Image (cartoon, rainbow, N blue to C red; front, top):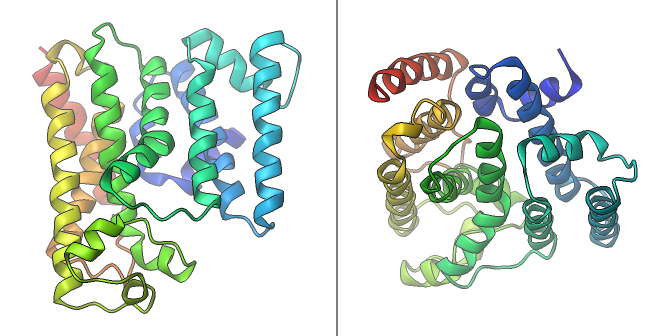
Length: 278
């Protein structure tokens, strides 16, 4: 098992099973891509000062520019070769880095538009990179990837509300908090009341809308190519449904999907998508 595969399996097991259905070359490429994304994300979650983290991201950006524009060997030589082979533009990597910068700035999102912009940078661009590896012909697949990325990130934010609160991070839009009478301090203090339930139900409905949009956009002709992302979609949608059934008890516990359930979802998705793509 490669180092990239180990990183993907340990840090994003929901994704690991989705990628297992890919042919070997594409599978190794996607593991390398997600290893890059995981390591970039780890910069924000590390113990270094914010200043040092920002300097590290600046260094990554400079090295990526150098690698892509002059082909001079850098630490990103492997990811560059994959980007060249699958035509992944530099701008996607830079958008991801800018999304992580938003994390380090501890920006509070005033509006849903601000949150969606963040979701695009840290999740949708990863989807856009991924579909380059999966392969597609219909340009509508890009809109599918953007909407699915937002749906997955909104689900992540809901799942991690309690964990993020412990680190002083609140990703839910301030306009939503005000609308439902919930303060940031309520979330940090893990106040799980009827107002919080209504707030989370609102987030739930929004995430469902993005899953729906992604499903409606995906062309039938591309369903077989997008089986890995459909597996991710179904696993995360199941996670969303579990949170709803538990009345959004996300402040006290982190909802997880058991390994066997993930495998079952992956297997059913492969069969379903194979039939629907005929």
